[in-house]
Image (cartoon, rainbow, N blue to C red; front, side, top):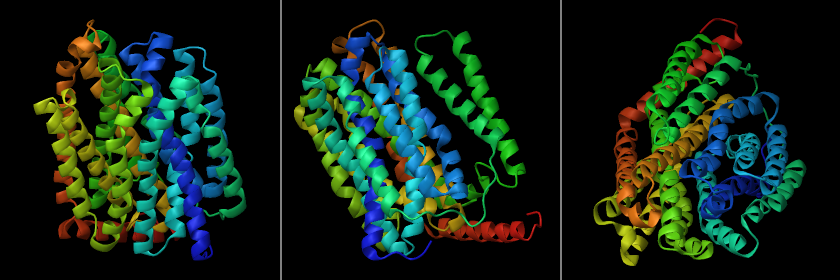
Length: 481
């Protein structure tokens, strides 16, 4: 791809950020609408979990396929197809007659969404070749998550109260269409120099692994062991098959050699932990604010601002720190803040006091704001440019899988604690184990960030990059690696 002017690079970044905005906004808006969905469709806790996890699971399952396909047939082409499918899926969601239909339509949305974020990140990686400029661009990209967290609850709350929950899907239409037209006009086409072959077996195993694992977790509080144990066993078998099959392929869906790099492996673990924490945090907060405190959707959205604003402000700062000093400091700040936030709820029942609730939200927002840039930058830095789509897709998959697992695990713990009682009577006690899980997630970010950002970790990254480049040269010469 030819070198673009600074202004054109900024425009490409803005267009890519638009895709992230509608995908991120969709989740934050839907969280505020969960109590309204629960009333209209008489949904159980597991039903609410599926409205979120059906989307994130499909997204996680297809992200790596989308990344490798974009590298092969063209990133702009796949990106534009994703915008079309996501926008059509949003229209269908707004027309859903029941909960089952909404879950299915959310899955269609996710098919489009899988073609957006990893492909957009691959476009950014190939557009911004200077490491510092790339880190700043990724910081701006991360700030969009903060914008969606700030705007989503407010916009969602206003729409749910004034028009109804169906209108939350309408906001994707103008943004999606504008992004489609701008992409067609201004984003240059790019692809990997050497096309990667499809891996249908690996793709099938990923779908089976993610789907069966999440089903077993979500349904565990409501179904018998004999009903959920087979799904857990299928997930384990799919994981073992994946680990055995993928290294044997010349061009696998998941290149396990990436994980020889300690920073890359650390970024994957941190992404799962951080986004599991986000998914669980939003799920618990939404249900508490509206079903226990009795706040309206709009008032609940306003209560989310102490979490959303720090995320928005800290994301670009984190990007600059990663560019100038590396990922260690942002990761330590992120892990520390998220851990302390979880402890406030787990030990001191922070939700029962306005002051501690506000403080807990601020700390979580700071932590989450700092965590995104080092994840993304570490995932794509040092990897061969030809595999940028696959590397960024692994990072994006880790995020979505983490969020799906967070909602599944925290929702299952909450459902088991509440039982047949009302939320108002038992929520604080039932949610405490969930908050302890979020504490553990914060500690994982802190400890893994510390271990995988030092000199030893950088050496493993350099060795991995060299091996990957050598393997590419051998493949180009048709010599088996």
